[in-house]
Image (cartoon, rainbow, N blue to C red; front, top):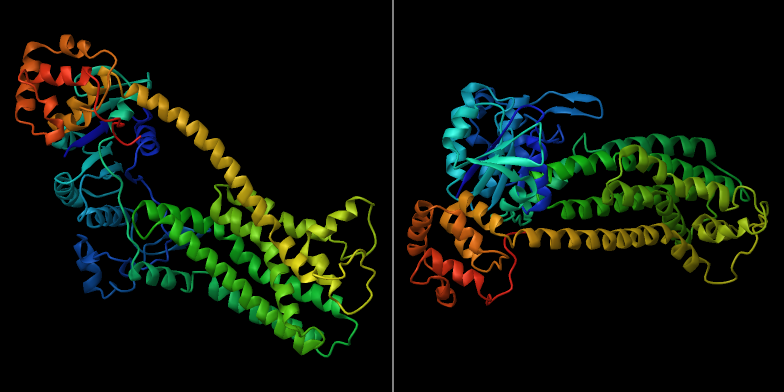
Length: 530
């Protein structure tokens, strides 16, 4: 396997180069600074042995090895824990342990030495040498450049003047896009979720900083006040009781739902750093948790209404309140967890169902409103819930039957529109992705690509190149000097192919390889991960 170092002046685009490699290929990408939830205990990280960290003995002696947290800042609150350099080593060791049982991965590291004291440099160098035995590594550095260049198999130099070209080893003026494609050797890390991952999710979410306990505390406070102020309410005030109770439920849950954006951002970066299982699994678990939280708060609301007035006790009332509450908050779940929108945008768009309910459901002023616009009330479950109140409130157009069915269907309008938007957006991005993929495949059918991959990875790339149909293979023959060609011939003669690939190993070595490539290929196969 190979170790490739990307160097260049500050501002030359080294990190941008790594970001583009990450976008173009399946790889494990460790950023210079990963955001981790600072309240996570290091000892709680699943399938990780912190005793391998070079500084862990200190915490064992101080008897802090079970309690020390990752540390850092979240939502403006600083939490003391590991230092910045220690977190850097934690992430690096995490990658080392996670990838130890897999092979042929493409691991991309951005500034692994940044923020790390010189005492720990030998530890990182040792780990890099162990990792390169199994994996292809591409890293960027501004520190200890000479040490890494001496270790490296390849050096990529980027320039702040002309970002369209890079220098690879001694080759000047290499097209940047071609260089990105040449990094395609390597696979993506495959994580399998186990019981430790599920236990980790449970411990973190129900910790004192996970948010659940805050919801419980506020619910006790808010519904306690509700009971005090609405106790012994008279029949006929059901609408007022419903308004007050639903407002208490909404504001009890709202802070937890607003922090879903922060949770998503941190969780995605943790998953990229291989701290825990896949992003999709964690989002699914978080979705289940939020829905369960709504159900629990709805049960509390239903019970408090029963204690204060006692006229809305049927099961249909419970489900009506549940789906009406979900309809007000579901946009925050969809946008907070399953979009890339920033926090402010999620707060604005996520509040729209609640805001529109006030304006268009006609429950705050039954019978009022402009004709035509009032018809929008049928889109809101609050309208159908008010139709269930055993009083004549002047609600217009209440259905004579299937009221509960309409309530449930209207509560699903927002998730339906969100899924529809995601499908349309997916089709749009897939179209452009396929177009970009076609362009990349065209570039990968050139002699320049074949040359570059051979220069970077040597003989192990030949098996991948033999299925490549190139446009002008004879240029490859004339471009190489006799000495280069003889070296390549020697490499090819020592390279073994499978039985169905022996045609590529002609008697003329390198020339036979070229003839094989120039002829019709037996298989249609893309080179590398596109």
